[in-house]
Every structure is written in C-alpha cells, then in structure tokens.
Length: 347
Image (tube, rainbow, N blue to C red; front, side):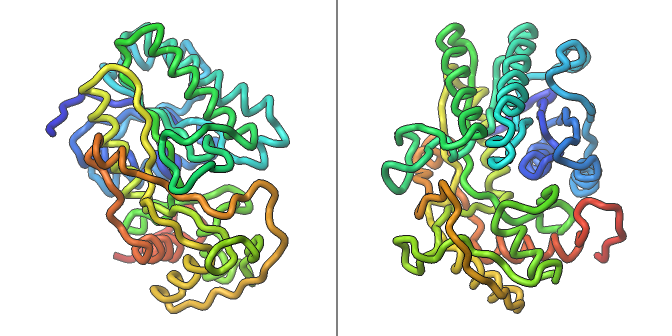
C-alpha cells in the first residue's frame, strides 16, 4: 500500500522504540516531526537517525503538557497523524512515585488528544504494553485476554486505553490503533542506534551487554525454580526493527478505517532467560557468567504473545530471529560503550 503523508508527529521520538520507528517511517517516505523533552533519551539519537536515513527531522524539545507550545506545533505544521510514545516507563519508579506517573502519562495524553481534536487530526497510534495483561489467564496471550495491571506504570497504560475507547464512543470519526509491545531487544544493524538505558538497567539484554563488555562481573538471574523447561522465566523477545515496522503498518491502518483496534506486537514464541544467554554466547563467543538470586515480586513464569491478529489485519509479523537480536545488540554495545556520547565510529 502506498501512503502519502505530509507529516507525522512522533512524541517521545528520541527513545529506544521511537528512534527506530523514525528510521522506518523516513525510509517509507514519510516526513517526521519529533517532540521529546529528552528526560529519558538523548538528542544524539535523532542526529544518528538523520545520519542513517540521510533525511531531515524537525525536532521540538518540549513537554507535551505545554499545551500552548503543542498547539503552535500543530498550527505550524500540516500534521496528519500522531504516534504517541512519550511517557514514563519504569515499573519500580512508578511504584515509588505513583502520582508522578499518573500525572505525566495520563495528563499528557489528554492534552495531546485535546489538541489533536482542536486541529482535526484524528489518526493516532498509541504505544501501550503487554503489562496491561497483568498475570495472564492463558498463554499465548491474545488481545481478548482479560486486562489488569500490577503496578502504577501498567495502570497508566490501561487507563489511557480506556480513555481512548471513550473518545471513540464520543466521536467515531477518530482512527486509533493501540499497540501492546512484548519485549523489544536488538538494535539497528548499523550499530549507530540502540537502547541506552539511564542508570542501572532493569531489562535482561542491557545487563547481558554490561557483563559481556566487562562493566559488570556477573549477571543476576531472578529465580530458577519456575515451572518452565529450565526453571527461568520465559518471555517473548522481538527485534526492535520488527517492532518499529509494526508502527508503519499501524499508521497505514489508521488511514483506512474509523474506530479503534488493538494489536499485540510480538513473535508468538517464548524464550527463557537461559536460552537468551546461551544464544548470545553462541553468536558472540563471549561467556556470560551468572548467579541466581531470589525471584522478583510480580514476575510471571511465562509470558508470550499470540500475534495472529496483527498478521491478519496489519499484514505484519516479526521476521528477525533471536540470533540477530543478540548480534545486533552486541554491535551497538561495541560501537557505543558509553551509550549516546559522541565518538568516532569505524565503518
């Protein structure tokens, strides 16, 4: 399908998923406008997106809760669709600061939708999460699974989904696609763009990379007595490029229907923690020493998606294997040992 948009607004476009999505959108011929306050991201990410694609991005450094500034952006640009990534995303931080999370994630979305409505821009792709499934009632997880949330971060996603459902009921002319992500890992194959978590990372792959690079001596595995084949948790890991491509498909969907639809973006296959470690060791030749500690509260044993709906309705499926997720992650780490800091790269 050939899609011609004058411009797409991406909130939080400098983040891990946002920056890779910018690449896919630019390569698909779209014009991209990014709003980011760089609280959890770096401007350098967008510089590299432009380096990779050789296409310009219009960048606004601001918080989307600044409504007057947001309205001016809509006034100054012919925006036809919005992909909404911006939001706080640390589970642990949300437990300690629930009001901060509710205010930022929910209020910012309300303001964004109000401004979109004012300027008659009604095509929206919303970045949600598999956290809205809570403790899954069945595996694999389909979009029909019961929804719940185990922490304030997850509840903000769940509340926003409900707000968008109410918006559609009040005005059916909107076109909204909600994307529930599973576990993105990997990096762009150039090694220029990848995940750059602030502080101590919470996710598995950044911690593996830190051990592989010598920044940490040993990897901690949280529990090895789960009812799985090797005792460690099983998750649905998806290459970040596949996930980014899913947003292009979701954007195309918004241009061809009115209403609201929700899609899982995952591979439909689960990998255990030990399988991820073993695959990383195989493709890199680097041994990852680990030790087992107590399980974390709230971790479910098995969580992976049923992505059938996305395949049937978006013509999308994950294509890149676990081996590529691992080797692309390692290439990013080798090229960027300190994350997004200006260094020289070998071709």
